[in-house]
Length: 297
Image 1 (cartoon, rainbow, N blue to C red):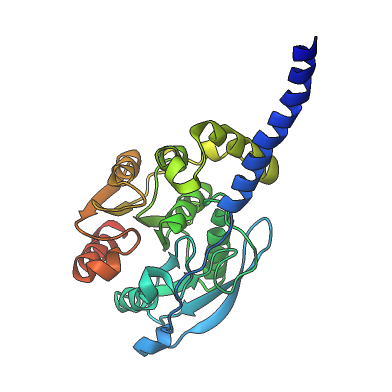
Image 2 (image 1 turned 30 degrees about the horizontal axis):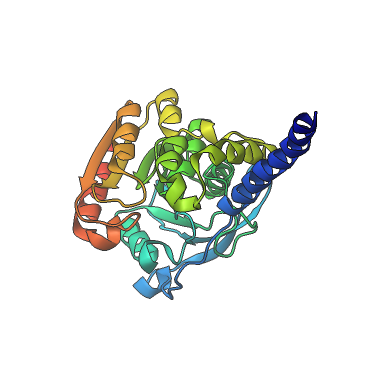
């Protein structure tokens, strides 16, 4: 009888500990981290730009952005940074330089701070699930600037790529995608790195997924950009990935390109995660220019 009593006492304690640690890990996973700060803006490259406010769809987050208009442009591109970065600080501070190059290719450019990042509202990130609303808000902004459906594209880096896929899945106004260092399936990314990244044993992972769903009302295991690419209307998709990516294995890039009916994969050598433009700028720009001129027409 005593042993059964101890079991009835210990089981609730174990459950509280199990789900309590899962809750703490789920909250920690959404926290936006620090990023090195840089000083460059589009003005550094002689471009006239405006600081504008974008409002996310559905939940109406106020998001900061830089808009670089171009009078002769009939196409616009939304630049979306990755996790723990911003419109100013992504690619080791080189995102404004990339924006200047894209502007020189004949595009108007909108550089967006995702929720919880840079100067935008919010405290946390959601692996691209709610960030897609931010990208859709950017689409709404560009539509008001006069850009037609299909004449807007998104270049998303890492987390920004996931948000870009989700936005394109929901709105055909996005006519093309460039996915830089983006994962194909979140569960396939988290599982192999769980012990090293969290310091917790594998049996804790299901509790994190359950607590995440309770907190944010979506299942992390369903965050699968490759599946959304496969199910959306065919549009040109350029996937850029480094063979030596230390955070997102190149297999994810291959899966994204294979899933997209009009997908193209370019594999870079010797580049760090989300630093392709920094590490191989000439190749990066050459590939982008060909995609913009030939595939996205």
